[in-house]
Amino acid sequence: MGQGLSRLSTGAKIYLMGICGTGMAALAGLLKAKGFEITGSDISFYPPMGDLLRKLEIPVHQGYDPEHLKEVAPDLVIIGNVIKASNPEAKYVLEYGIRFMSFPQALGEFFLADRNCLVVAGTHGKTTTSTMLVSALKGCGFRPGFLIGGIVNETGRGFEQGSPPWFVIEGDEYDTAFFNKVSKFLHYRPKSAVITSMEFDHADIFPDFNAIKASFEKFVGLLPGDGILTACTDWAPVREVSEKAPCRVVTYGFNDHADWTAVDIRPSLRYTSYLAVHKSGLSLHVSIHLPGRHNVLNSLSVLALCDGLGLDIEKAAQGLRQCKGAKRRQEIVGEVQGILIIDDFAHHPRAVAETLGALKERYDGRRIIAIFEPRTNTSRRAIFQEAYARAFSAADKVMVRDVPDPEKAPEGDRFSSKQLVEDLRNQGLKAQFARDASEIIQAVLDDVREEDVYVILSNGPFEGIHQRLLKALKKSLEPSH
Image (tube, rainbow, N blue to C red):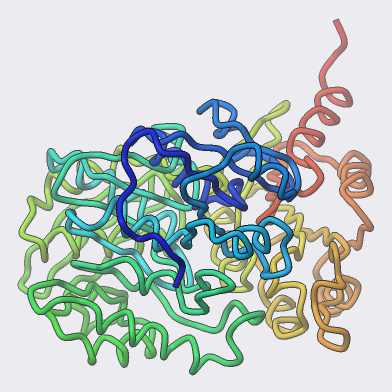
């Protein structure tokens, strides 16, 4: 469970291992804002978190070396969940008795103890829904604290200390640390919560879906009797887990039995509009910037929670209208001669399908080209091989990079990019295999068309493909001066 959970005095030195993770970088920013002296280490510093840390002027050591710790002499070390027990810095911390804790423990200790914590959990939509909840609370006149696993487009960062009573946090079911193998969200002291969805993911740490469901059941059991659970009952497992909640449950979804549902959905190039309807007959017109039915549900969960908390949902809806989402979530990173480059974090088959469907709807009549990198610990495995073959139906063309670092998945349980391409072609989809980003960029240049929409799907830097592709398109298409 880590050591040294007593609070440190302002000015103490805190060192974060794995500091460039989305949550860890945000925590580093929160701790610095609280007056601590922050340093850390990581292997790579790709955008947007590397850029954020540089902007915050937080010194970061590249690579893991005990000499970094000797140089800093930290009062506390926060160990990210990417760190293994064999890590040389982690071994040094344990050997020399330096106080340490996990990222979720630190967040709970330093920021959640005196707040009403609103936790957004679920397999999909956590980052976007958390961002929407922050905007809705601001619309209601609050200044919530928050920590989100991404960069909020309106503020340029994914954290804020804010003011009581609310603190919004993205509740991840992934494990905490090598010394604490439980889901992160079990440390977050929820006052109220949202569960957006629930299906199998994180095949590297959960043996099966029942293990994931059990973790959500433990999370729900943490809610106090006067709290609220907002649950999407379009998902049978969410319904089953919510039945065990010790508090009031507010349901939402597209099904007829939910407390809140959405009808008359109208997509456009700038907004997605719909009518939020409560079972009592109350209705509310809502407009959000983000496309897709999944984002309609994400925003509906926020309204349902705000209503459950007794807040003014008209003002909450006004806040939602201002929300521009988070970076790497259907984010337009550039445009060249009317050709769009969109970045999206989607890597689970369902997230891929929802994202592509939403963009196909928003950019009706334009060619949607998906560029996919199977990079996560789950997508590197064969578990979703067949599901991915069904996930790209909304794309007009699919380009699939070879699996990076395939050895990170067990031999005999490895995803095949070539097999995915073959499966997609067998369905009549245009699909192409590429060894790396350079091959993809060249393939784009060989077949680029007017008003194409390129959607880059990866949870990592993808060899800097976003800016490289923009540069290549400008060089190829724009007249030289």
